[in-house]
Length: 296
Image (cartoon, rainbow, N blue to C red; front, top):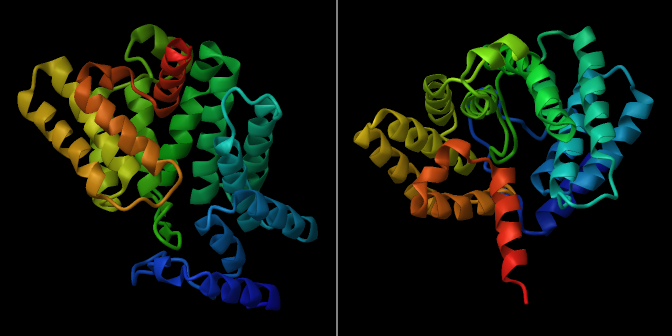
């Protein structure tokens, strides 16, 4: 471990946060002897801009290092997520395109790299949302392929406190994908794939067993159960969905988006009819519109 990593680790401990490391004795758990423990610490502390700056500096020295590539993609995603959706200071289309291009270039060196496959799907998904519905559909098949390949990978990874776990998070992403992509022949014709509520539930159940007590996963599991339960008049499935959403309030917050997900779970319990169309971004847009309407 180099001097800068030791110094950062010491500073981290002095802040009194070392108890939140939550390092488990499981395959894939990142450890302090990881070559990029410094970046893992910054990610764990939610110091995303600092992490991005440091990663870019390291990549300038080792531009062919695929490990640094996925760290950069992850930090870029988190930096963009912290911005208000109405913030025009960032060209988000160019930002997400850079993420996708970086993933593609690194995958050319290591086509089965789970982190890069996950990052590629995330980048393309976000890029599609900036370009509109048709562009999103055009990217659906490569997104599905990337996340499916990631989910089927034998690679195991768990960040310091389990904020990110592979392949669990790939299954989670696929579950959202299958719920939100329309299930119709015209979509299949355009996109080369289609949505499926049954697949969505299957993926979220798998993700939840892989990464239990995760707020985002359990919320999406509850949403899939509410949606499919209402579509098929399955009262037990609706009850299961409500139970999972109610459980979120007792789970530990690990990421900045967890509190938002807990709030959205409460809204979905009050209005379960929103489940099939629900997305975190869409709900936040709706909340902001309501606030504007209520403003004097």
